[in-house]
Amino acid sequence: MRVRFAPSPTGFLHIGNARTAICNYLVARKNNATLLLRIEDTDMERSSVESEVSILKDLKWLGIEWQEGPDAGGEYGPYRQSERFDIYREYSERLLREGNAYHCYCSQDELDAERKKSEAEKGFYVYSGKCRDLSDEQKGAFEAEGRKPTIRFRVPESEKVVVNDLIKGPVAFSSENIGGDFIIVRSDGVPVYNYIVIIDDTLMKVSHVIRGEDHLSNTPKQILIARALDLPVPEYAHIALVLGPDRAKLSKRHGITSVEMYRREGYLPEALFNYLAMLGWATESGEEILSVDDIVRELEISSLAKSAAVFDFQKLRWMNGMYIRNYPLDTITDLFLPYITEAGYDVSGMDRTTLETIVDLLRGYCEVLGDITQYLGLFLEDVVVPDEETDALMNEDESKQVVKAAYELIHSEITETNFCDDLIGKIKAATSLKGKKLFHPVRGMITGRLSGPELDKAMPLFGFDRCRARIEYMYKRYVQG
RNA sequence: GUCCCCGUCGUCUAGGGGUCUAGGACACCGGGUUUUCAUCUCGGCAGCAGGGGUUCGAAUCCCCUCGGGGAUGCCA
Image (cartoon, rainbow, N blue to C red; front, side, top):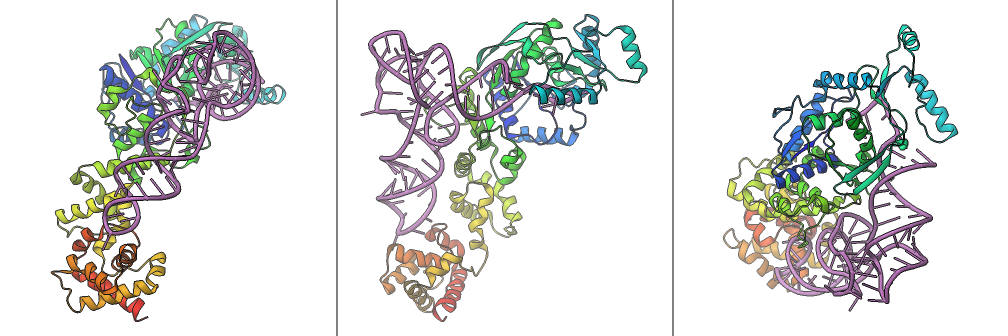
């Protein structure tokens, strides 16, 4: 069994394509099959090496491994379509020679006009087929005009094509609905996707084509080409599309849709992989947080959902948070570091154990890595300015009592040695406040915020000096006025 | 327009004739834990698109309607 992922390098790796890649990877792992990577770069204007590089990088980041490809080599290369034009040319000549394809001299402008007219009159367009049976004289005349022909595939009349899809089941098409003879080679000699995809799949011995459902409607074209060329047809599995919240195919306008952006936003590859793999599928137990090995064990290609799935950013965030909380502390600390630095914090002077203790305290508040900076300043800065809602709370009389008590305590019986254990207890005794009435003002006083890490664990890390400075600041601000 | 695919809580899904007064997860709401918030935990809200069949019995099978999506490019 051999499967493939065939991205076209015209931008970043898109979430939908990432899911297709993941599916292929999973199926390969499960069946001990080879996964090959093929770069479909026949759109010369839009393809770029930068895109190819970034797509490979994103795939690797997701943990996807392939055995053959432009970087990995392999015996069925080259693995870039732009390097295989000689191969395609032979097939084109054969198609021409055997009458299954013909030169079309219609210019782009003529075709555009035809299309426009037809769409205005009928609402749709089918190529007229006027170059189907050109005589040698007519061809010569066009050549003399300097026209460069395209090559069109001669679509057979009323031929049935059934795609035995592993997910959808048998899907029947008839050649008359294909929309006429389609172009397989552009006038500049570059072949188009629907033509060469089947050639490459058979030449590269791909046994199972697993790709997005948007390719299903074009599959009969590819099969017809295979028939004309006596090529074997692989098995197909068309996976349902990933949709945006408006139920249209997920695209740029829906926000962040590239893997690269998710990485930058602070998502973990395991979480994104896990989420994407679970889209359109579920385990028997209902368990959703799964390792790659778990998924490989349980996933069955035929049990993938037939219907499209809306991409749920919320659930991804939740899942990412789960991964952040369950990651080994040492590893997750390293992953947080760039986000800490980017936010302008310098923790280079801090010893590792303290850093990890802080990270462990704060990771529960994180859904993406960048969330770590939300409360980090509390451990690194002296005075914290209360936010709006804290300010409102601190202006209440009970809060002022707390601040006043704390201020008096740090100037009498509370010292560096006992502030962690006794400060809150003594404030409670002095004010007779308890529960929320006590803890909220204390939190506000020490952190300037109404929520955050557990105070009994955080205060030792803040240190006495810092807490004292904050209490004094709050005293001046709220008690003295 | 035509062809193709799809339709279970707001979202992802389980279910494939009786065990379904339809199960789980995210989100949302409420209780508990945390002498506060988050975490964690317990509970609640909420769905078989509609209509016809078939059957003793339909979320499950068939048909129609409606709805959504995809394809119909000298894009992939």
